[in-house]
Amino acid sequence: MDSTRFIGVLVGLLVLFAISAHAQRITIPEALARGGVSGGGTAPSGLGPSLNEILQATDLVVVGTLGEPHSYLSQDQLDVNTDFPVENATVFYYKYRSPKSPEPDNKIQQTLTLTQLGGTIVIDSKKFTQLETALPTLQLGTKGLFLLQRRGGKYWIAGPSATLPFYGAFSITHEEELMPLMSRRDFAQEYRDLKVSEGLGRMMKILQSQTPDQQDPSKVDTHKNYSPW
Image (cartoon, rainbow, N blue to C red; front, side, top):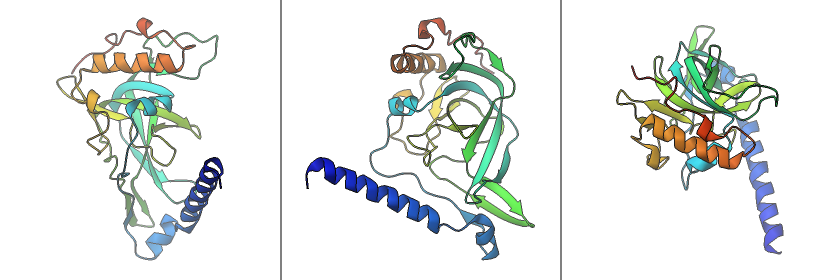
């Protein structure tokens, strides 16, 4: 068997394994009926993605403050999702827009919502918590920079795949520095404790190199509409 065919077979087996594992999961209502009270996963092991790879999957870059969260059961009842309104949201980049629409130019968006995998819900007076240790539960009032990926009409925290939406969240400290919220310390080390304006500038240059038809990053003022507490 040549190497190309072998890789194709291996990928096929991995896909079948993932589908099988998904099919074997019980729903959250079923877990509650059996006495379960929690679920979730651990941080991925092995070599993780670089921030450049996460930016490749990013559809929107926004800075804002997280509002009151709302947790709910996913449509397939296998997961808990949590929506956070992003208040005073300033959009610095978005991948998909009408050719006739204006350039981003740091416009304030009032209705932007991001979605995190995990959270706590109550069904028939029974509480269930899904904790994904790869990305600790986001907190009300957190000011942050968020790399978001649009899927199914929602803006999810970006990741290397739809099953790993844990990498695109950074808190902004009182010193106006970035702090990756992904639990793996080896992720985005070059952005840790970096000034927000500098980090945004670097990200915009990377995004521009990946999507040259989008806005020139030199026209995006990463200091504009961005002020400390």
